[in-house]
Image 1: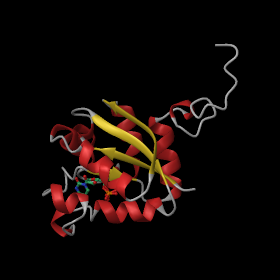
Image 2 (image 1 turned 120 degrees about the vertical axis):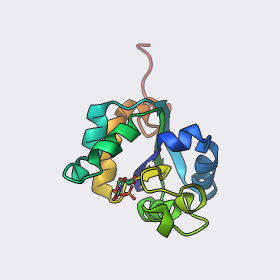
Image 3 (image 1 turned 135 degrees about the horizontal axis):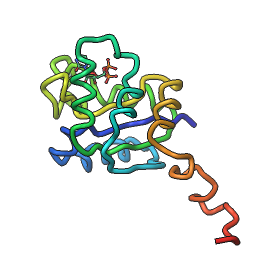
Length: 151
Ligand code: UDP
């Protein structure tokens, strides 16, 4: 079963789009296995966007993603990485088709509402940057199979 990391960016949280976005992934049949509303640190942001370090927009990107609360999520399902990228729409909302998240809610590339992993390798790396294993439903503690006799 494939997993991915999705993040409602500060603009999406501010505009109260969390529910709408969660609803889309639920309706598509995917399973939410971890979520939290957090303010991410500069270190986490710089690690998350490391591949863009040399780009001219890197500083603004890190400033923006740390500017307010974000809603970080881990979802799972068959082909979820490819399908969630399609549901998000193109990076630049000007190119994002209506019906996609960015196509419905965003109009500028710097404030494009959502992040989603683009490969299984980035999903693993991004999930580990934001979640401890015990925060995910797949952990034996949360799914009820762990031995809690010592609690
Ligand atoms: N971005 C930007 N200016 C650009 C290109 C990208 O501000 O010219 C931001 C945009 O918010 C995007 C993020 O950098 O979501 C990461 O870029 P990437 O190419 O990885 O796009 P994504 O995977 O988010 O679609």
